[in-house]
Amino acid sequence: MEERDLDPDPLRQFERWFEEARASGLAVPEAMALATATAAGGPSVRMVLLKGADERGFAFHTNYESRKGVELTSNPRAALLFHWQPLGRQVRVEGRVERIAVEESEAYFRTRPLDGAPYPYLVLDALVVKCREGSRTVNACVVHAVAVNQEGFRESLGLDVVTSEDGAAWLAFMRSLVARGLSGVKLCTSDAHPGLVDAIAATLPGASWQRCRTHFMRNLLTRVPKSAQSFVATMVRSTFAQPDADTVLEQHARVVEQLGERFPAAAELLAEAAPDLLAFTHFPKEHWRQLWSNNSLERLNKEIRRRTDVVGIFPDRASIVRLVMGFESGPPKGPSCTTVSVGLTASS
Image (cartoon, rainbow, N blue to C red; front, top):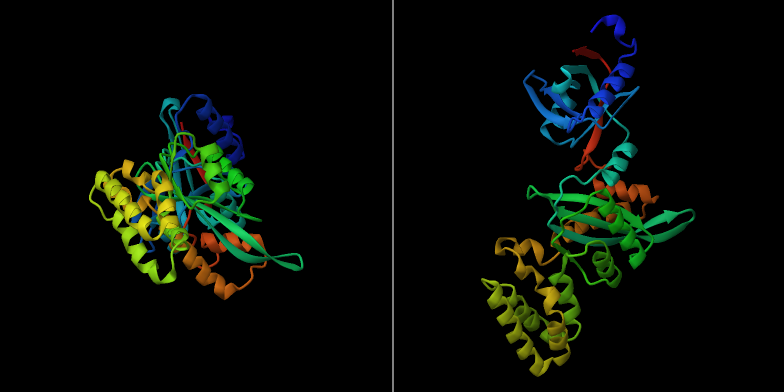
């Protein structure tokens, strides 16, 4: 390769080479090595994916609290390396790293491809908060999805702010997750909101539904006198303390029979709910505690409510999203973006 064959604009030259790499059939032409260093100069390197290249630089995504995020905060210089072996070409990029706008990070988090599939376990929940729309104060509903990815880690898949928690809102949210790559779901845990249950059935064919035991208990206890609620709750909880699936089913039947003598309405509800309440028994026992309720999202909602008590009324829907995602109080917990300004060299 002669220097006169190169475009004087390094970014245009990169775009040309990148298109050639994509056309060559490379599996992941956007894969690149990212080298960073601590403030003391200790180096480290890992593979990341290019998310875009324009006049601002080369964009990639990272958690600000990861090792590379921390290193880039203390020493905001980095190097990238694209190695396209079949083409006999590599491209090096060096420069200063800067965070992109919060709004762009937020948009990425909510629309990013879900490439951790299959997601065998999915948890869904919603939270109502107050926000301003024009001169009015209205209720808004935050719908949120968390799943276990193929590596066994919990991953927040997305959230949305909707006017009300109805079937149409849940269906649109679930369709957006599927369009982004949600697949392989074997069990979905949620409360028994009719619109949500229908949306799960419509978008995740083949997935079982686990009725959240915590929400179910609240519903069940409305069918017994207050003086007996503690006793009934203890009886029902014994169902979930059994060592295997068979004894869970046996204990559930005993509890239904015992409740039927004094609280027939509660016994009827418990019997009807059995297939959905005990869906977790078809999965490995070591996973049961994570499957039989959506408490993981409930704990997050409690933290959001605690912060909401301080905020009071949100100025708009965007501010709700940022609080839930953690953008307005320290580094974001989810993936965000940084850019490397252009300083490109190449060898071929």
